[in-house]
Structure formats: structure tokens, C-alpha cells
Image 1: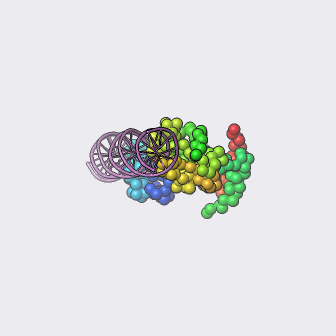
Image 2 (image 1 turned 90 degrees about the vertical axis):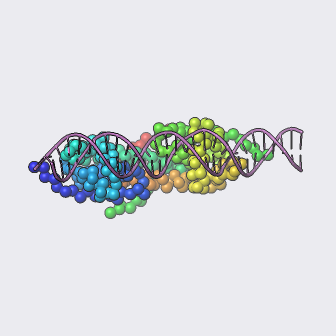
Image 3 (image 1 turned 90 degrees about the horizontal axis):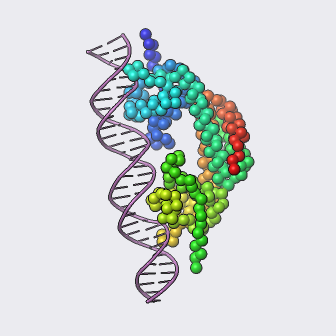
Length: 137
Length: 137
DNA sequence: TCTGGTGTGTATATATAACATATACAGTTG
DNA sequence: CAACTGTATATGTTATATATACACACCAGA
């Protein structure tokens, strides 16, 4: 009865050369796909073996990534059945991304201060760089 | 003849619990001290043993931190003599901090986009959070 | 002057922990 | 029972941190 449609998840590129652990890159990729709305609630994720094969990574690495995503309530796993996007997965992914973005901003302000700028100058620096940043794609 | 004044470098807190490797925390601490102008050019840094004792860290960890700082041209080492702040150490530290801050801002914008925001919305988000951030200390 | 002590940085071999892996096991469904 | 799914255990690899022994620079005292 369960219509198991094949999903072509675009996670990559996953690379040992890229910053962050492999499993973390996978976690981040799924948060992006789910947060941007391309994977709705209860959508089945690729199986461990399929995704491992696609990403040229071991099953354990995929497992670890899924564990992390489940810990954050973004997906859920059912033995013998598969892994699925949680009902509120999108909201949780977006909240995680927003929270991470805020943390990065705080760090950026801190770094600007440690470059010798005053508090006001540091914030002005962040705002200027933000405005100057080209809008990719 | 060489007046070796004792310098009380405030690097800490260095902790295994804090994010980043111990040597990286030390590197960051010196970049901050030098970038904010508290350590001028040719100022002698603490010896490996003294700093290792103060920070409750091994000599090798201090050595690795100093190696990284030398690689970036912020300090220089002289066997048998000691380690010193480079003449243009402040500029290099500040440049490194500014560059890092810019990278963090780019990442923050990217994260905001992946939370489901448009490019313009993501930038507005970053600017809003920046303005709302309290100016600590 | 020269020599040795005490400071500096340097080098090698060794633990520890996070990360990634291969292989075998267990639950679900038709 | 066959073919999927997720699960668990033992193992290898790498970055990080360590202890110990070595080499160079200065300077006080013979």
C-alpha cells in the first residue's frame, strides 16, 4: 500500500576535503533540503545503503547523520521500514538554521571587535559587508 | 642588557570543553591580544614552558600554536632566544580577524537562505540581528 | 677569556579520541 | 522466505595532545 516513490535527494557535494566531518555535511545538506521545502513531512529518505552508495560514503556515516537529524527532531527512523521527514521537520530545520545564522553573526561581530574595532564600528562593518555581498544564484 | 620585562598575557580561558582545539584557542587568543593592540611589535611572548604551565597545557600544544602564528607572519621565533611579536603583527592579526569576520557573515547569509529566506530577506535578517545584538562590556 | 648554568626553542616516539569503515545481525513486508 | 529496511560490534585511520630528551643563546663567575 505504501507508495514508495523514488526521491532524488540532492545533498552533495560531500567531500572529505570540504570543511566539517562527512556526517556533518550530510546533516547540513538535509537541513537545507528540508528547510527550503523540497522534502515535506513523512517523505521517505533514501535508505542507508542507497545514500551511502550515491555519496561514496560508508553506511555508518549515513547512519550517524540520520541519528543526528533524529536527535534534533527533524526526521524519524523505523526499523525495517525506513527513515522519514518529521511532520514539523521543516520548522525545526528552519529554526536550527536561523539559530545558527544568529550565532555566526555574533561571532562575526566579536571577530570584528578583536580586529580592533569599537562595538559600533564592528556592527557597521558587519552591515556594510552584508550589503556588499553579491546575491549568488 | 636585554631588558626582559615580564608580560602577563591574558589568553584564557583555554578549555578542552570550549569549541575548537586547544592550540587553536591559543592562536585565537594571541590574535585578539595583538589585534587589539595590547602586544606591540618585538614584544617577547611567554616561553613555551611558562605559558604551558599557566594554561595547564603541554609544551607541544603551545609550540603548535606558535607555529601557526608564525606561519601567518604574526610572530617570529628564535631558537635559544624566544618568541616575539612581528613588526607588522598587529596589521596581520587584524587582517586575519577581518577576513574571518567576512567569512562568518557570508556563512550567516547562506544559513538564513537555507532557512527558507530569499536573498534579500536573508540580508535583512542579518542586519536586523546585528542591530539587535547588545554591545557587551 | 672561557666555561658552565639556565634560560630559550626543537625533535622524536607515544597516548587518546573523534571519525570512518567492513561485516554481521535484527525487524518489516509481501 | 526473500528482499528490502534499520541496528550493532569490532577495527582502522587521523588529528590532537602528551612526555621526554635534545640543541642553541646568553651571561655570570672563575
